[in-house]
Amino acid sequence: MLLPELERFVQHLAVERRLATRTLALYRDALAGLQAAAAEEGVELESARAHHVRHWVTQLRARGLGPRSIAIALAAWRGLFRWWGQQGRVSHNPVDGIRAPKAPKPLPKALPVDQAVALAEQGAVGDAPAWLHARDHVMVELLYGCGLRVGELVSLDADASAQAAGWVDRSDRSAHVLGKGSKRRSVPVGEAACRALDAWLALRGEVVRGDEAALFVSQRGTRLSASQVRARLALLARVAGLPTHVHPHMLRHSFASHLLQSSGDLRAVQELLGHANIATTQVYTKLDYQHLAKVYDAAHPRARRR
Image (cartoon, rainbow, N blue to C red; front, side, top):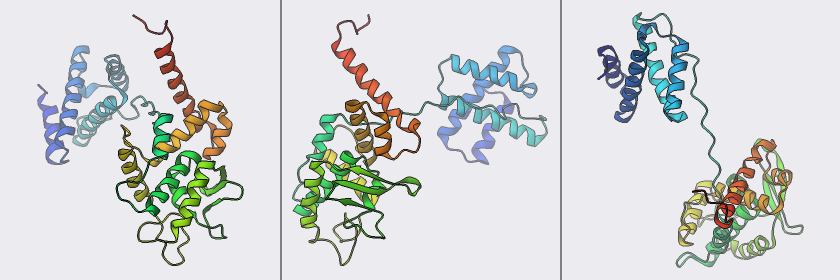
């Protein structure tokens, strides 16, 4: 049971701050932990100092709490001492300046090669018209085959011009795009993507409106939006029987991971992705190691530990 002064703080959060029920429950648990830690060391909460708080955070880590849970605890503690400070009960906030440990960045999710290929070769969805199948096909080929961002994909124009943000040059099989920071880059376009592009361009005239410059258009004949690409790709993945939700950036991750696994050339992958810093690209080496570890665990007779 919380001390009365801590319970009053929880009521303050509920009534005046109107925190959600789930958040209140998390804060109540955090305050109960603070109360127990202080009592165990014989420290009056109003007398707590920064070194006490750091020690209590260390105890939370020792108990196996993750960075997010510790951040929630610190937010609750910091709020309590701030509230007490407004009331004149404490002269300083011992939690100020104390941060939770950084959570490791999750690795980008990449499709296995067979699933990526199955998606690229996905047939028409239901009774979709031929132009829609052709458009979807080349979009997947460019996302996976060139590692384009979805914004780069929808910015492509059918023909190169002074105003074009990006275009595909069929003569030298390359895509020219305007990436982050308004940086231009060129990436090779594979034969499969070139064939798909030819098929789409042959049918694009059936749906495009007027002088619309966009390479990819919706059924209204205007430039396709990024959200429309996301929705279409998710549908294609479901129809292809893929066991996971697929979004455009997952195909970019798959492009980078599969290319790195085959070539081992991190610098080339950096250039193809348009990363300004190679440290951004190095995350794919971890994906590659995960693949190698799975192969080892599955195949090597000495891999399994009892």
